[in-house]
Image (cartoon, rainbow, N blue to C red; front, side):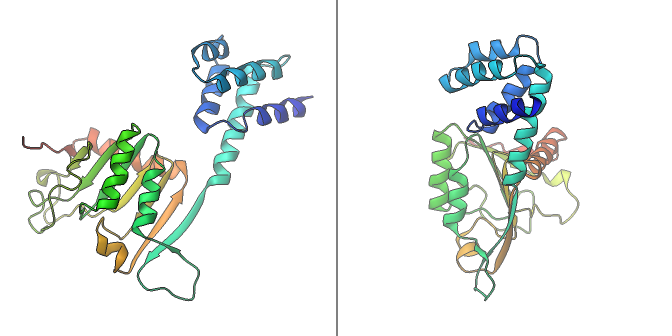
Length: 246
């Protein structure tokens, strides 16, 4: 009987997004939580699933059902975890994924909630700029972090890229870094679900001409940890918001 309940619950939530499964599990751990979630849900699919879950767990504890849902969610996320090495530059006889500007734009276009883009050099690439603007139109929150001459006298790149994109812009102030230190990380994090970490700056030459290597990690734990590290650097005052002149 227990196995039947588990199988039924997994089938019921099979087509739901991860966040809705997590909401259902959380609701089941609070007295009256499932009924409250159903009454507040705007999606008829979520309301219907709430009804099906209530029927499925009749005769068992809500906490048990919550554990089943969290287990199913964890198994789903584990199946999605992949690490893919991506290259730009000359090809070899090895089968490799290509790091192209179109691939980066595609990752940005997948964003539903937030984008973190960090680079030593950041040029105003038209394709990426358009993708970021599309993200803004979907309600995606964008954070841009790049090096600046005022913080690193050895840096001679552009100060502000994607000037027309509404974004939170962070800098690493000179008084918060060791002498001759550079903001040299190259990271793209999408929705705290996937992360592209590598050698390439946000420039056309990086993916069109240079020999660059990166790792695309589809793992919410890794992606979230990267984003949380940046969040904590902001909290500690190591990264600060850019003050743009009017």
